[in-house]
Length: 213
Ligand code: DX5
Ligand code: ZN
Image 1 (cartoon, rainbow, N blue to C red):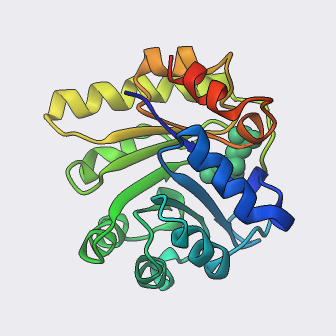
Image 2 (cartoon, rainbow, N blue to C red):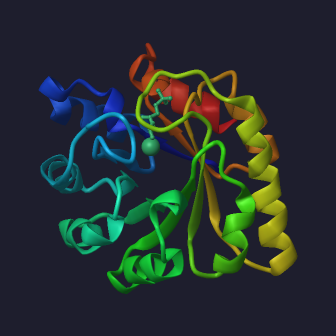
């Protein structure tokens, strides 16, 4: 079954606990936590305190680090209880080293690619990651329109994994909604992040059911 990770970036921070319960009630598989530093991306979102609170819910947390030098924080987010930690390939000089560190810390290791980054950069890290995150918007903000060209990478990554006998989740992040989800799943996505579309839905459970297809 296709997994869904509602993004807390689109939640109401004044009612974070209530919105996390919405994710649980709707059957979300992960809480997607977008950590931004105002350097790797032009925006600042939240950091350890919010992730710590999200972990307390018991829903597995999918921590998307949109930060420079992610190696400085991997152990800390792992200690807080993150289930998945994803670093950006563009932010890692030694990508394999960071992916190994994430696994050594007991988390699933994810590698994210900006829309302009080629999936080829994953080839020599196959086997070192559990998840590839295809960004379908330029990271930094929720509520943007999906960049369709970036979705080609979903199939390219799926084919690369298959041809090398490797396995990994393919996560898509940015502009996911009920109209874009069927195409993403067809191309090979296995985990969908939804921020504004999830929290803006009239019926969140129905929304998840619909995007799972
Ligand atoms: C964007 C973040 C996304 C964001 C998605 O930089 O990585 O996770 O929350 O928001 P929507 O689903 O509204 O495009
Ligand atoms: Zn994200």
